[in-house]
Length: 195
Image (cartoon, rainbow, N blue to C red; front, side, top):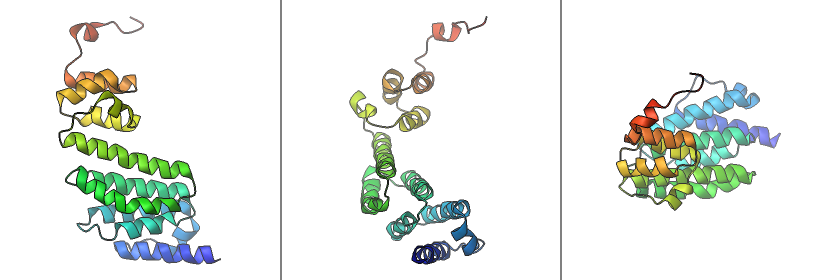
C-alpha cells in the first residue's frame, strides 16, 4: 500500500512539474503502459527546458518506479535528448556525473550498465564531434548502436574511414564505406545473387 501511495505521489509530482494535465493519475498508477507514456512526455518537456536544475530529481523520481524497464527507458530517452542538445563533451560529462548516483536505485545491474554505457557512447560521439579522431581500440569500446549512429552522421572522412575498416558489424562498415566514397566501381558492379 505504501509503495502505491509513493508511486501515486511521484507520478502526480512529475506530471504537475511538466505541466501535463491530460493524464489521469489513477490510470497512470494502475497501468504501466500509461505511466511509461507519461514518463516519455515528462522527459520530452524536461529535455526541452533550458534549465538542467531539476533533471537529477526527475531521474530519481522516475527510477523509483517498480517497472524497471519503463523507468530505464525514460532515463535513456532523457540521456539521448540532452546529449544532442549540449554544447560539447565537457557539458555532457558534468550533467551525466550528477545523474550517475541515482542509477544505483535500479535493482538490475544490467539496466544500470546499459545507461552508463549509453552515457559513455554519447561522450565518445561528442568528443568526435568536437574534433577527436578515435583509435580502433576506442571505437571497439562503444556499442554497435553508437557505431551505426556515427556511420550515419559523421562528416569526417577519417572517422568514416575508421568505421568502414573497424566497425563491429558489416552493415555499419558498409554505411560508412558508402558515405565516405570508399566503395569502388567494382563494389558497385558486383552482381547480386540470383542474376
